[in-house]
Amino acid sequence: MITVENWGIIDYETAWERQMQIVKDIQSNRNKNVLILCQHPTVITIGRNGTINNVLTQADYLNSVGIKVIEIDRGGDVTMHNPGQLVGYPIFNLSGYKEDLHWFLREIESIIIDLSDIYGIKAGRVEGLTGVWIDDKRKLCAMGMHCSRWVTYHGFALNVNNDLSEFNHIVPCGIQNKGITSLEIETGTKIDFDAVTLECRKLFEDRF
Image 1 (cartoon, rainbow, N blue to C red):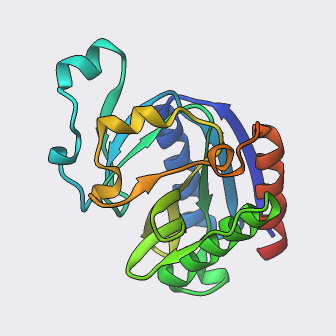
Image 2 (cartoon, one colour):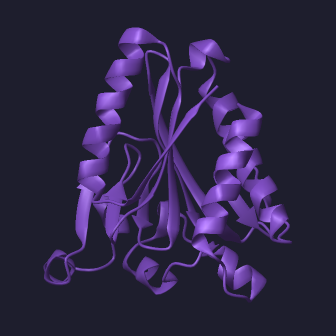
């Protein structure tokens, strides 16, 4: 059983603080699993395996247009969040399911693959890489998580109808020879963000 909260468009650092409050509560009480769904104003984050060298644009310019670069404790390298991207933070007590973070990542990938299928998109995995891809070449959904005392946090970022030109500021996930795509680009039609959010919620509730 999970609780789902929709935080709408929320500043990244504010969301991170609220996330950590929920993490501490679940670590203490082990009485719930919470899925946060939201969007962020444009922000670049660097995971534990990342490097500032994968941010291609000068800091002075990024500051001038209000794009923060934030180092965080999730797995993975550099990624971009911006409006029109569905960000999900599953804060789950894995002790109530399976104490295996890799299993949990594969479960989330399966949910995003099923969600893509609803929109007629054949998505899948790339061996050795985390996330969900189209034709092994274009990343549709980035993932990066952390697990502490078997409670997960951080999560996934599904490109729905966001401005992908902003990804030119970075080497997404530190991978040089792959591209970025979105549900809207792959379908060639306008995609309703709220409808995607609802489908994502249903799939998580069905699986967990």
